[in-house]
Length: 226
Image (cartoon, rainbow, N blue to C red):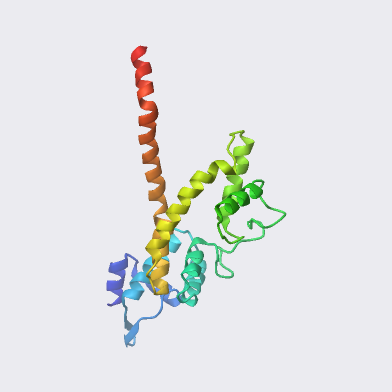
């Protein structure tokens, strides 16, 4: 297909496609004339992945290029591809790379709840990277809950962790079977990034339903008595 068709298929404007080509984020097409080239389905997939990494993940163009280079270099290592997409094993020098101030392992910046977060991870038997930013998130939430006197510690999160473990199993089953690194990366973005808002929305819907079933009748009865 010509660049105009590539633009129509992906929704990316031609000048932006040419920018991605110049920057090496998009591989060149097959030359058909001095200033013309044909593009294939791999270009369509890569363009969609670029736009998702920039638009949804919020990466800069430079960081996106390094992530794409790392994905290509990863060959068929699906674990590495998934880690790159999640920001756990970023390409060197990208803005996904953990800094000393952000690394959960850094002794001078470790969040208060880090020990509790590690206890939760250990209780689940999870094998996770020390630099996984999700560890810090869990630690900070646990510390905040402790400060509020909520009576919620890492043991209280175990049922949620088990549910998360089941969801992760479903996620990874959807990634299995993809052999091409670019297809793996695209699928990983779809499952791990784009699906997250839908999962949160489903939880909200379920919460309203359970609230109605558990508490709606009580409120209604109280209103009738009044």
